[in-house]
Image (cartoon, rainbow, N blue to C red; front, side, top):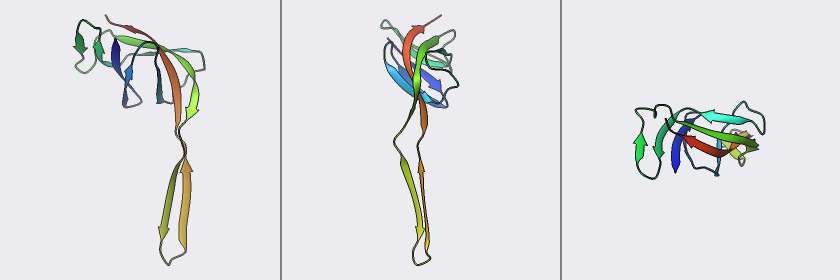
Length: 104
């Protein structure tokens, strides 16, 4: 059983017991979060596709904490002009352990 959910403008495949990284959520570690935007759900006996979301379907999960991705370096330069700019960025994510997938 799995579901495709939307969080932060991105889509994720959620399976019970698996851990997913979603864009930063305003939730404490150990809190329970509910994703209402379920785009597709596979129950084993059939696939339900939403238009655009599956009515009444929810995915719940437990927040494990906040993590950062690897650093991405941006380097701009112009030759012979003594112009160099180096900037780093680490995107923050929230790790969520998927608990239950409910269909209406």
